Image 1 (cartoon, rainbow, N blue to C red):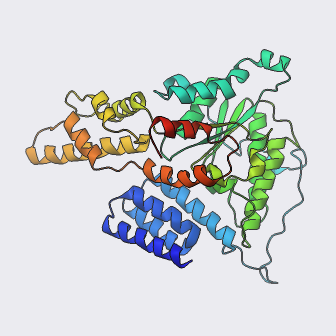
Image 2 (cartoon, helix red, strand yellow):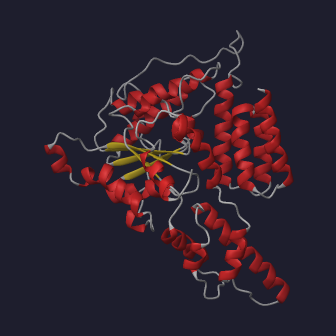
Image 3 (cartoon, rainbow, N blue to C red):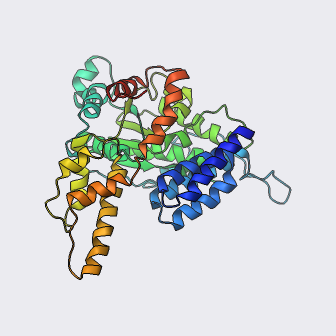
Length: 397
């Protein structure tokens, strides 16, 4: 425990010395969520006040709630005056009046497809071979006893486009899309989270073909072996997910389950068994083609001077899509400041973008550091085969 505290203080010192490094602060918060939720709460508030991404802040707060649930901090013991609600027995869709009300979950219709995803040729090929091809050929699949539907776990560093790819898959399938986060599921009332999961699958079946996308899935489907009084709530969420994925109460034809995580090693093994979420694809930092396309999109309509996006892409190897967006943001801010001083428009240039990139440490670096011991010492059921190949190809230890 002392070693863990010492390590936290070392990171805390680095954060204090570089408050502008939001990626480092986000990593620090992730560590605090495991060791000290109260301290994590104050760091999240400071992260938000200093301009941290609003979507990431929402996810952090959801993770904080989950951490407190696991420690039993959110559930006070029942008393005669404030008795805890009692979970209702498991019900079927037909027996639950709440589930019969349509529109509990908004399902959008994405207009993008995988053709709109620049680069990432290996990812798209793997998706097609292992997941999409059978779904695009339902008659052939039926001849081999395969039903319409399926599940897929996408994993990789944060900010590399897993949510965008999930929407593109829905667009490819011509399916509705329901996006779910931990914040949508957690409740202080016992049983509400399980009912929320029931309603998600109920609405997806009604809107079939439909893609259900669970973001930050390790926070929802984490291992049930962790201790703590509040962990019972998380175990019940996983148990309800298993029931819905197995189609115990209803048939899941036309329902596609996609999940994304930065920490696949934390997923409960029961969710990964054959017939459940048994297909995986790793979404790694964008290749040069994708980086150039992301940069082009971020600079579109902005004052630029013959920017060579290919050259900038070559200088940003290992950057995530979010990192590339930050490069453009920094360069645009500096160009705006220069324009205000000069009294005329000073455009963004290739050199100014490369200069901005040089001051940014790729946020993916810490993720590769986290996954290294998992690959070296963990049990691998084949989930990390693509990642191992990537590491060899890029000369990573």
